[in-house]
Image 1 (cartoon, rainbow, N blue to C red):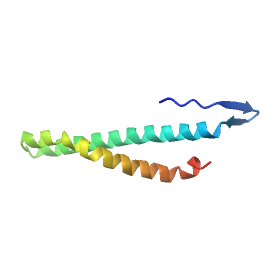
Image 2 (spheres, rainbow, N blue to C red; image 1 turned 90 degrees about the vertical axis):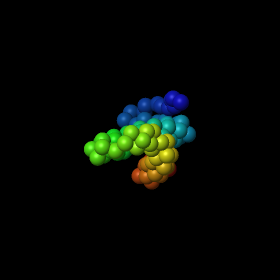
Image 3 (cartoon, rainbow, N blue to C red; image 1 turned 135 degrees about the horizontal axis):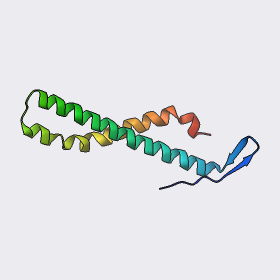
Image 4 (tube, one colour; image 1 turned 180 degrees about the vertical axis):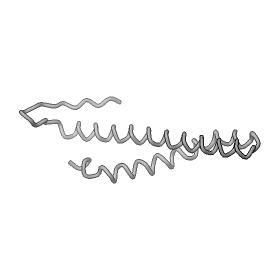
Length: 94
């Protein structure tokens, strides 16, 4: 979903529609949360894969890695989203 913000320039100031700006900020936070949760999940999978390969574990553990993103993604998304909303709370309440 692409959010378009109507804006007008008056000298050095930029005037925007409040509700559209709120939707825009929420969409950007959602996009950032998705990106961060994907990167963190990928790093976790890679590190566990290296660990399993280092200790010559059986292939069953590698197949188990397929379940890791499915389980961890929802948890990571909620944690990252809560943290970003806390950090940007002042900006979201404009």
